[in-house]
Amino acid sequence: DEFVLVSRHSPGGEHGLLQAEQVRFALEADFIDGTARHAVSVSVGCARFPEDSDSETGLLDAANAALRLAKTEGRSRIRMFDFAEQERERERLDLRAHLRQAIETGAILLHYQPQFRADGSVVGFEALARWRHPSRGVVSPSLFIPAAEEGGLIAALGAHVLRAACREAVRWKEPLRI
Image (cartoon, rainbow, N blue to C red; front, side):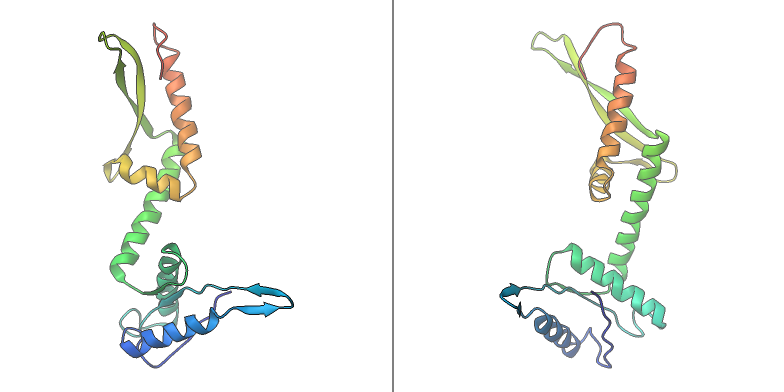
């Protein structure tokens, strides 16, 4: 379901983008198979030689990176390879891999925020997940929670947090909610 189109026109120029749009438009035409009508959506990733890479493999990798980005943005997108976006994608994948390891090794720590009744007495605690990465330092939940969701790790993260909170709570002298 993927193919490569090589053109001597730079896809970064107006002609190259027009060509990519024409290919996308032609492939998205509905087709009829018997009595069924089928719709196709097409995403396009473009890379330039030699700006994005001067090797066949590097150029294909760059086009694939642009294609992945186009697919994550929705259907029927055309994206040019962008080194800065590629670096951000590499960072996201790296963060996700380290997060998986942190969950597996129990490196996600919990901090407990007290919850109070109106009279000021403690009714329980909210368990807050925190991650201290060995080289990045403290990673904000605003970064690692979306990474867990995108990487299919949210259930494992939730299970880890729940187990750790329950292990902690059974050691408390007073039964309090978490």
